[in-house]
Amino acid sequence: MSGAARRFSEVWDRFFYTGFSAESLGLLRICFGVGLLPFHIVQFESLVRLDSDGTSFYFIDPMWHFELLGIDFNQPLLTMLVCCVLMVATLTMALGLRTRTSIAVVIVSIFYLKGVRDSFSADVHHRYLVPINALFLLLPSKCGWAYSLDSRRRPGAPRPLEWEASWPIKAMQLYCASFYFWSIIAKLRVTGWAWFNGERVQDVLLRRSLLWGVDEAGNPVANQLAYDMAQSPALCFLLSQITFILEAGFPFILLIGSPRWRLLFLAGVAFFHLVNGVLLYVGFVLMPIVFLSFFDLEPVYQRLRRRWHGSPPAETPQASTS
Amino acid sequence: MTKRQITWFLAAFFLIHWAAVLFRNDRFPLTWAPMYSSYTRSPEMKVRVADEEKFMRGFRVTRRDGSVDWIGAERLNVPKWNMYRLYTQRAFKDNSNKYTNGNSALDPFYRWVWGLEEGEPAFAIEWDWRMFWSLNKSLGHDPGDAEFIVRIQADFIRVYYNLQELRLVREVTEETDLRWDEAWLERWR
Image (cartoon, rainbow over the protein chains, first blue to last red):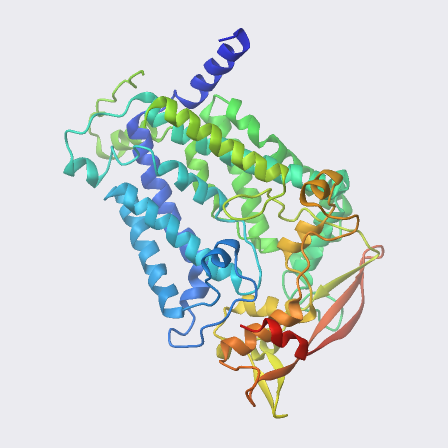
């Protein structure tokens, strides 16, 4: 192996295969699963509201996998059933009950429900991209070993090594950081630097504020704040610069060692999504559930346990090396 | 799985995702993340007004026997915001964001990969044919039926906003009037 290849291999191993314990991975599974429950509700509640005995709508543009499978209409009763299955499977995933099967069911259910929702009118929503890829990474992992009902059923299962616990978490981090970075690449590729001169932000603020119409004086009947903000080109420019910093700077979080600085940066991104949700109706408000992967949850859990129950700290196992 | 297998799995996982970015693939769960990326500046901005009562009531349709009817979200059993897009966008032959983004700023590399001529869009959808197919199939009408929908009409208010002066310019009622083309019979399924 050449020197460069060896160095690459060392960096790869250090990044993907170190840093987390099986307990950290188990806690991430629980928190991610619990976070997914409201996420699913927000994303798919409109499908549950449909009349179960009503018309089976033939999609105007089936998503690629529906086209492949020949699914070209919505069966409302089946859709509602899949919604229920999704919620139950997400809960059993969080509890660690038949973890791998649960994750697989969650993935299939999301594919089906997203297919239904986005095929009605030829949409494509990107809100599930990070969560579904996180699930893909958790599927082959040993995330069901710690803090799970599976571990009670199989008490003798060997403890996952540090590399086995670390790679899914690190890969989730890398995917998440990449996703934000790709959106900057897309903006530059399609619109160029002009995207960041403030006009695009002004455009979307006005669009969303005028969406509900205008009163006789020419003011929007709703979302007045977005409209007022759009009147200030300087503010729009600032917001576009913040977008650039958050998206282009996201990969740097992988280099930040301090959890406090990570928390600060991610809180900023979470606030960004919240503001986008309120002003622009962009449905990424619950996206921060995937940010949990940027923290080692085991020490946090132990600290909370000590503080709230006064119990002695559990013997935190030293991460075994491979 | 062994460490070696995981290494291959991770390498394949990220290679596939980066390839999707390179080739502008936006098929879930792959993406080049084009959300809100496309933008063309024009002096006047046009905004569709979401009149919930109107779009939920739906399309004014004319059947083959000449009768007129209204077909809305409840009858089609479609969620509210999907109905909004069907009513104010697809019925007006407007592309959805995925196709607008997919057709935006196609670089020479992309055109070469997918064999597209200069000016040729990556996605060209016949929304009018799809509207007739979707509505008729959903309601169980075949082309020979008296109830078969042969005309779809819709209208909504569009607001024009001057971006230089930051003021509302006018409101215009936009109308669409789609007619069934008998040549489409060949592709009816």
